[in-house]
Length: 305
Ligand SMILES: [Zn+2]
Image 1 (spheres, helix red, strand yellow):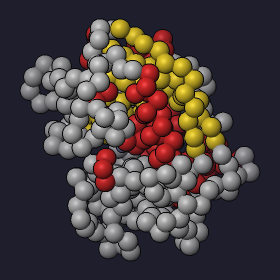
Image 2 (image 1 turned 180 degrees about the vertical axis):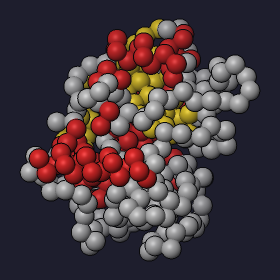
Image 3 (image 1 turned 60 degrees about the vertical axis):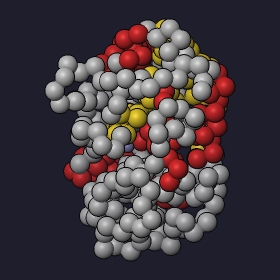
Image 4 (image 1 turned 90 degrees about the horizontal axis):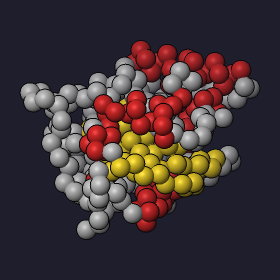
C-alpha cells in the first residue's frame, strides 16, 4: 500500500441522486454500476460537426482529411506499424491532496507516465500511435476542497496550476468519489478555454491504486485519448460513422468487465472490448488501433500544434 492511498469516499453531493458536474463538452470515464449518465458523450450531430470542422482545418493546412483506407490494420492483427510523425508531449502533473491523503509519490507519478508511454507506444498490444509523454514537473497542492471535490473546483485550480500551450498535457490527480474515474477536455475546446484544458484522474485509478479493476493507470490513458480527440468506439452505437475510425468495429454499447465474447452490431468485427477507449476493466484493455493513431495525429495537427 502506498502512502496517500485511500478508499474513494462518498460523493459530496447533498444526498439523493448522484449528479455529475463535468462541464459540457468534456468527456468522462464512469465507473460501472454508478448512477450517473455520461451526459457529455458527443451526440452523433455534435460528433459530425466536430468532424466537419476538423476536415476544414486540415484542408486549410494542406493535410489529408478524414480517415483511412479500408485496408488498415485491424485490432488484434498484431499490427505495430509506426506512424511517421513522432509527437512528444510535455506533461505537467499536478498532485492535489489533503494533508498526507492523496499526496502520492513521484515514483507513482512516473509509473503513470510509463503506463501512458507503454499504451501509446503499442507495448501492451495494438498499434504504436507515435505519441510519447515526457514528465516536466510535479506540482503539489495541499487543498482539501480541490482534492475531494475537483469537479466543483476545477475553475479554481486549473487556471492557477496549468502550464504550457495547446500541445502540453496537464494531468491532475484527486479523489473523484465513487462514480468517476476521470474526465478530459477535448482539443477543440482549447481555444475557447485554454486554462481549463487537461485531464483529471482519480488517484485510486493510478497504477497499483485502490479501485478494483481500474488500477493500472488506464483511466489516464483513456482520458488522454479524449484529450487527443478520440471518441469511444461505441460513439453512435452501430450507426456509421461511429467514432470516425475505420479499424475499430462499431459496438452498440459500452463494455463492462471483460466478456469472453461480445458482438453487438451487424457490421463486421467483434466489439473492440480491448480498446483503451472502451469502458472495460483495465486488465481487459491493451490496445489502440492504427486508425486511432492517425485520427489523434490529425486532431493534434489541427488543434494542438
Ligand atoms: Zn471516455
